[in-house]
Structure formats: C-alpha cells, structure tokens
Length: 138
Length: 138
Image (cartoon, rainbow over all chains, first blue to last red; front, top):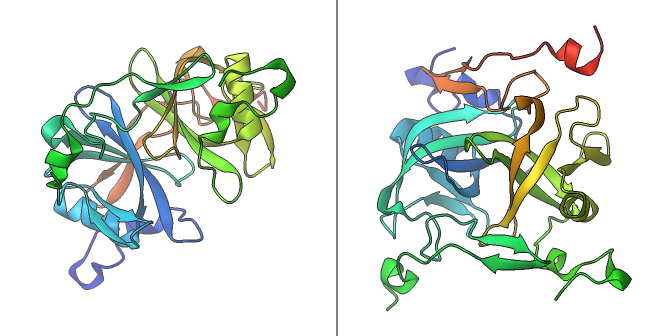
C-alpha cells in the first residue's frame, strides 16, 4: 500500500479515486490558515501524483490540455499542507499556503469574488494586484 | 436584470453560468461560521434556482437522476447564507448553516474526512452519529 520505486507512476492511493470518463477529478483549494476557498480546478492522475510528490499544487488545464503548475507564471504557488478525499472518492480538497495571497487570475484573493444579490452577480472582493502586473503583459 | 414573475424559470443570473454539457455545475458547500468545507455536489439549473428561492441547498443527484433536497431524509438541511460564483462562471460556492452539524452520509461533519498520509488515505475525522440512526435503517 506504499509508493514503491518500481511503481512511481501508479501509487495505490491514486486507484482509490473515481476519475471522470475524461480521467479527471475536481480539486478544491482552501487556504489552510484562513479557511477561505480559493479556487476549484481539475486534476488528472499525473497532476495529483505530482502535487503530492512536489508539495505544490499541479492542476490539469482543460482549456490548454496540459499540466498547469499553479504559480509558474504568477509566482502564486500553492504549498500543500493537506490532501483530502471525500466520501464518494470523486473530489479532492487541498489545504494550501497561498503564495502572494492571490489565487485568482483577476488579481483577487479568491476566484469566488461574486455574490448573488437581488438576482444579480455582484463583485464584492477587491483586486489586490493588477493582473497585467502579475502576468507581465503591462 | 431582476427576476420577474413572468420569467421565474430562467432568471438572468442563471444564464451567466457555464453549465457542463450535461447541464450541471459543481457546488461546494462551506460552513459559513467555521469555514469548514462540508461537501461538493452537482446542481442543474432548476436545483440552483430552487436553492436561491427556497434558501436551502437543493442539489441534482446524478446517481438517482433527480432533485435532491439536502436533508429531506436526514434533517441535515443546509440554510443558505451566501451564493458565490467563480471567475470562470463554472463553479458555485454555497456558504451555509449546516443543520445538525453533519453534512456527510457517513455521519461525519464533512465529507472530506480522509487525509493522504504516507501514501494511504486515512480517516481522521470522527463519526458524530450512526448513519443507521440518521436514515432510519436501524
């Protein structure tokens, strides 16, 4: 039941997960200190294995069709404190230390910055840093 | 941009959501007081509309193929305090008051009761109430 050097590609704990037909699992990232929910993204088998091995969140970008090492451009890495699995074995929860205090590509702390109010989505959380500055397009 | 009585089936705010091909969106439930992540389930358009209108979480059960009023059997309803949408418009976050303090069908507070430790999933959170008692099968 342990990872072994001759089986690094498929540690047993990955077999417990009920992957989608596309081979993915949703992963929620939560700030380990504040409890804030930062984002939800998707992982494939390799990205979850790398997340556990490297200690930083690695997702699978569905739009780009490749591994997405969170923070590789922005520097806003997520240091893994805890990896959890739900009762149905089909959702991962990461408790992380969010580098830079910004998880969202909009420059906000969390991706969940809009709240439903009087039948409209209203942005209620501030932009901490201009995305142009974060991603170097300015 | 407001709900109107002649358009109750499709309020505009539902159109902002990028539903999956199956017409679903993942919804994370977070305890509004403690910040604990309780569960993740799926919603279709009707269940999200009902959640907002009724003030209690209503999910879509993919396994049963029908609306799932959380707590209808267990009494463990989730009272809605806040409904949030992420930057990609494809994940919902519910901040809730968890009735009974139990969200998981295993009788635990949260569905995320297993942590990855030394290459194994280990249950680390206690069962608060026997599921047989909750669901009346004992």
